[in-house]
Image: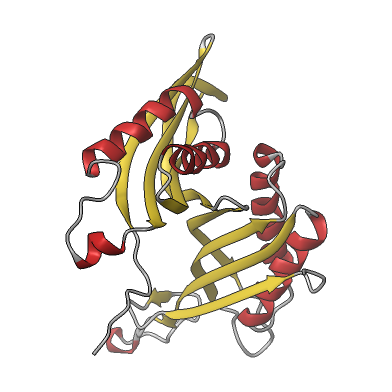
Length: 271
């Protein structure tokens, strides 16, 4: 029986680094986790144990750190582009480089009503960037993950509205590389959150579609938006054992199962 290796990649993930950016008295930082995967002429490495390029995990991490020294600035997308370009340039056997960066989002601590120069706090939200580059082109994506969202749902004369809560992941693909990433990332995030807050009560499936449509309408550089929404269900707390009437405004979040909804919306005029 003849066998063919149809797919094979290798690389390293969880390459952690914190880059301090000093701008006078104001301090900025990037808190990153980088994954670099390589695809190319590596069949003998999988079938015969031939040594793969880049010299192992430590060598890959060292290259990421060296490039971060010169190229890790305010935005993670350009850094991902530099990493992918470097690999293709210096390793001819690599035909495709895939770089994923997850940045922990830190915000400044407010002291006496003013943001502190050097003190930060963070939630679970992460900013995302992904670049898949070949010799012919580069696919560039941005996004965020772990964003908690919650809305108190409107009720009526007979029923209280309850609470909707979930965790949102969003990824969007750019149609070209010359993009003001520093402008578009917070713009997409704000458009999504505003649409979530103002969306009329209806299905969560429609909510995801309409949030994606709003982002595509307002940012022409984006060609595709993907959402994953994990929903936490709630039920009314049972007060009957305490001799009390159940209160629809006293809710208990359920540990599971969790609802999951995915949606991808793209421009219909794409080639």
